[in-house]
Image 1 (tube, rainbow, N blue to C red):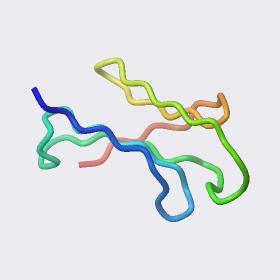
Image 2 (cartoon, helix red, strand yellow):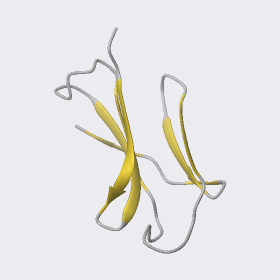
Image 3 (tube, helix red, strand yellow):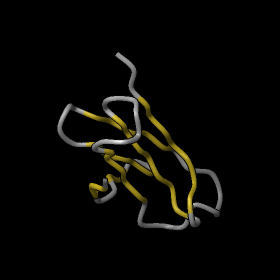
Image 4 (cartoon, rainbow, N blue to C red):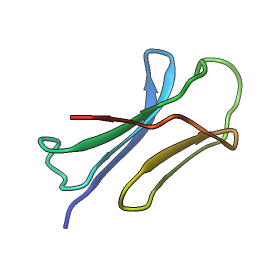
Length: 68
């Protein structure tokens, strides 16, 4: 089974994206950071428990949002 994970910068914000079926056509879960991604070094981590995708920036969980 193919799955897609992404972690990057978009519009000066960190983001992570998870596509559970690997097609980018169905439900895609995405999280954007609250802060600016263009300053200094940061530690990023993302977790997915089968229900919720979380993005952590410097140890702080970012507010999740779901998009299609």
